[in-house]
Image (cartoon, rainbow, N blue to C red):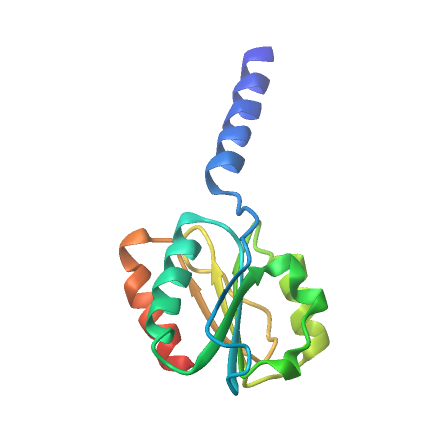
Length: 154
C-alpha cells in the first residue's frame, strides 16, 4: 500500500515538474510610442515560449510595440491601451487559467483579444467568452504553424 502511494506521489511530482506551466519573463520589443501595440500574456513552457519567440520575430519588422508578460499580470492590464491582446494559457483538469478566465469575464466580448489554450490532446472546449480562440496540444513541431496562424489573426 505504501509503495502504491509513493508511486502516485512520484508520478504526480514528475507530471507537475514536466508539464505545469511556469512564470513567463517580461520582455519588450519596439518603441512604446508606436500606435500599434500588442500585449502577449503567456505562461512559461517550451511550447509557449517558442511560439511567442516565433511570433515576435514575425512582428518585429513592423512599427509595432510588443510587450510580453505573464498571465498573472492580466489584472493590471488596461485593454484599451492595446491594439491586440494575445493570451496563452494551459487548461488543467478542463479549466482555463484562473487569471485568464477572470480577465476575460471582466473584459467581456472583444475583437481585440485572441486566446490560445493548450491542453493535453488539444481538445479543450473553452467557455463561451466571445473572443477569438484556438485550442491546441503543445506540439513543438507545430510552433511555426501556430505563430503564423496567430500572426494572420493579428
